Image (cartoon, rainbow, N blue to C red; front, side, top):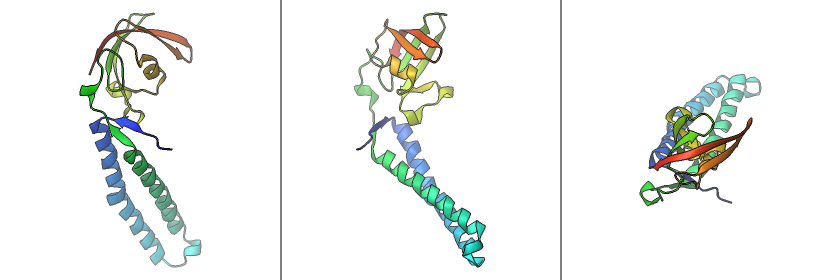
Length: 157
């Protein structure tokens, strides 16, 4: 079963850079550590060798997982998306109905979410609540301490 995820071109490029770094920098570094530990003699009681082999196993698992993510990634072209509804890659200006506070979020894929940049995942509670809404709609979003209501003020790309 494939898990297709949608990314911006920038987000996909970051994943590819991370994979390249793992393969071209981290993998050779761990191989070097294994070689150095092997040169120290008896492998049965060599903690450095065991640690390096374990690190190698973890790195190879991360590489494999990232390769799968990249192979299942699809780049979204935001010029084709509907501007009348909140979708992935939409920038939505919302207002908290209870206190009138306004905030703007861009909805992105899980791996691209970054609260400092006001990018939230479409899989987050707020992201899920905003999806499909239009300007003027009220999104009722369940949060740990109850339900919050947000009015969609503006949608852009």
